[in-house]
Amino acid sequence: MKTISIIIPAYNEEENVPLIYERIDKEFTKLAYDYEICFINDASTDHTLEEIKRLAMVTPKVKYISFSRNFGKEAALLAGLQHANGRAVIIMDADLQHPPSLIPSLLQGYEEGFDQVIARRNRNGEHAVKKFLSSSYYRIINKIVDVELEDGVGDFRLLSEKAVQALLSLNEGQRFSKGLFSWIGMEQKIIDYDNVLRENGDTKWSFAKLLNYGFDGLISFNNRPLRMCFYTGLIVLFLSIAYSVAMLIQVMNEGIVVPGYFTLITAVLILGGIQLVSLGVIGEYIGRIYYETKKRPPYLIQETNFGNGEQYEKNQTRIYQIRHNRGNQYL
Ligand code: UDP
Ligand code: MG
Image: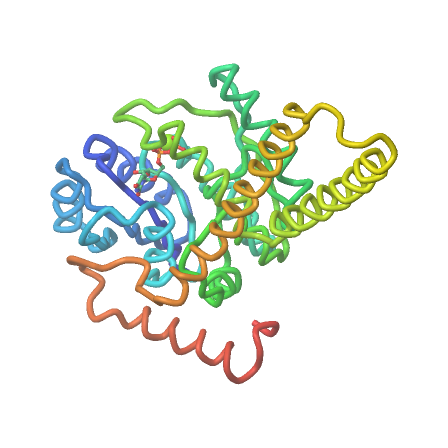
C-alpha cells in the first residue's frame, strides 16, 4: 500500500488537532492507502504540541516537528515537504477549513496521473470588503507577475513525488508557496469546494499581515516593479527637460517674470515622491538579497519524532543531484 503524507502546519490549534486527526483517519479507512500525518507545530503558545504528542503516543501514523520559535506557515510547509516519507503529499490547514472529506477526490486525481491536484474554494460567507479586495488583488497581480495566481487556490492540494522534488529544488529562503506551486507547473487538476468558515481558534492573519503577504507575491516573482521605477523616472526626466527648455526660452524672451512658487513646489514634491517610492522598491529587492545571502536555515527544529531524518537526507541528496549533475530541468 502506498503511503500518503499529510502536512499540517499548526499554530495555536489545540482544539483542532484531535478533530482533524479523527476526520482524516475516518477518510482513510475507506481508502486503499496508508497515511502519515506530519504536524508542524509552529511554536504554539497553547497546548497544541501536547495534543499532537498525545496522538503520537497512540498511533505511529502521527509524526511531528516542533519549531524553536514561530517561523511562519511557509517555513512549516517547507519542513513538512522535506521530512515527509509518503509517495504523495497532501497539504492542509489545521483549522478544518480544508475539509478532509475532499481527500478521496484528491487521491483520485493522483491516480489519474496528475502531479498537482488542487482544491479551489469559492468565497461564500466571506465579508464583502475582503472578497472585493482579494479579487482586485488577483486581477492586478496577474497582470504584473510572471506566474498565474488564482483566487481561491491556496495550499490545499495534493502533490506527487515529482512535484515535491521540484518544489524542494527551489532553494529560495523566502518562500511564497502560492507562486512556487504555480511556477513548477506540471499536470494539474482542479477540484472545487465550498468555502468553510473557521470553527475553533482565530485566524492568524491580520490585515497588515495580509497586506505584506500580497506585497511578497508581487516582489517574489519578477523584477518588473524595478523596471517600472526606471520607466517612471525616465518619463519624469524627459518631461522635466522639456519643461526646463520651455522655461529657458521664455526667460530669454521675456526676462524673469514672477518667481513661480507653485511650479517649484509641485516639481519638488512629485519628484520627491517618485524618488522615495522607487527607493522603497529597490530597497525591498536589496533586502531580499541581504536575507538570501545570509543563507540562514528557514527554520530550527526544537523536537521531532521523525527518527534520524532519513527521508530528509534522501531528499537532500536527490536535490543535490538534480542541481549539480543533471540541471534543474530534469526531474
Ligand atoms: N499557521 C502557522 N504559523 C503561523 C500562522 C498560521 O503554522 O504563524 C497555520 C495555522 O495553524 C493554520 C494555517 O497555518 O493551520 C492557516 O492559518 P489561518 O487559518 O490562520 O489562515 P487563514 O485560513 O485565515 O488564511
Ligand atoms: Mg484558516
